[in-house]
Amino acid sequence: MDLRLLAVLATAAALVSALLVPLVRRLAVRWGAVDVPDERRVLLRPTPRLGGVAIVAGFLLVTAAAAAVGRVDLGAAPPRVPAFLVGALLVAAVGAVDDLRRLRPHVKLAVEIVAALVVVYAGGCRVASISVPGGEVTLGALGAPATVVWIVFVTNALNLIDGIDGLAAGTAAIALFTVVVIARGFSYPTVAALAAILVGGCLGFLAFNLHPASIFLGDAGSLFLGFTIAVLATYARAKESTGAVTIGTLLIVALPVGDTLLAIRRRYFRGLAARSPRSHLAGLSRVFQPDRHHIHHRLLRIGFGQRFTAWALYAIQALACAYAIYLLVKR
Picture 1 (cartoon, rainbow, N blue to C red):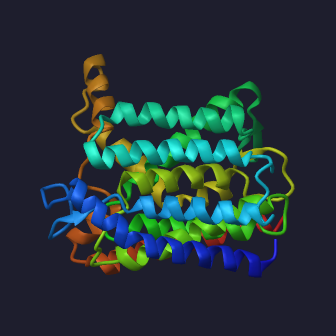
Picture 2 (picture 1 turned 45 degrees about the vertical axis):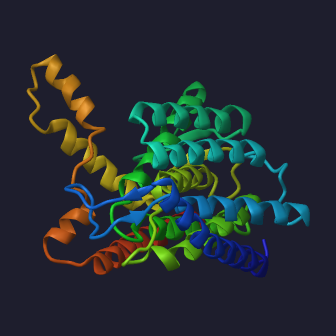
C-alpha cells in the first residue's frame, strides 16, 4: 500500500480525534465520568475519562470515508472488516459503559469473549500456529479457542498499563505503527490501512493525554485499542493466509503483555498456601484485583516523574517493536 495514502489516513484520523476530544471531555464531565485522586490512582486532580470515544469515532469516520472512495476494502479477509468492526465496537461499548457506571470485571470479560468469538467465527481471524523453540506448532482444532484467549489477553493487557498519562495510548501507537510497517507491501494492505488510521487516532488523542493529561483513555479506549492490536497483529506477517502468534507477534505487544504476566504472577502467589485448594481459588480472584505494583508504579516510586517514566517505557516498547520488524520482515 502506498505510503502517501497511509500518511493521509493517519493524518485524517489524528485531526478528527483531536477535534473530538474537547467535546468528549465536556460530555465526560457532564455525565460524571471523572477519575478522582485516591490510593490507587496516580493523579493530582479530578480528570475526565472516556477519551477513547474520540479515537473510536475518528477511526469509524475515517474508515468509512476511505471505504467510500475505495481506499479500504471492507470485503477483505482475513480478518473480515465488518466482523472486526463489530467486535471492536462491542469492546468499546462495554468500556464506555464501565467508564460511566463501573461494571463488574466478569461482565466486561464476558463481552470481550463474545467480541473475540465474533472476530474468530464471523471474521475469519484464526491463529493457526504458535512459535515454540525450534519452530512452530500447528494448532488445528485448538486454533479457535487459542485465538479467543489471545485476543482477550491482549485486550486486557493494554488496559492494565493505562496507569499514567499517555502510557497506554503511546504504547498502542508504537505497536500499531509496527503493524503498519510489517503488513505494508505483503499480503494485508487492509490491515496496514486500519492500523494506520488507529495510529493517527492515538496521536491526535495524545495531544491531550500526555502529562499533565486533561483527559484519560478510559476503558472505552484502552480495551478498544487492545482488541484492535490483538487482531491486527495476528496478521502482520508476510505471505500467510492464516494468523500466527510468533516471537515477532509477541514483541509487538511486549510491554503490556510482559507487565500483565508479571501482575498475574504477583497477585496469584501473594499469600498463597501451595497445598490449600481454597488458597489457590483466592489466588485466582486476586488476579482481578488492581494494585500499584506495575512497572510504571515502580519507576515512579524510585523517583522518576510521569513524563520520564512514559518515555522510558515508550523506548522499551519501541526497541521490542524494532526487533519484531527485523524478525518478521527479514523473511
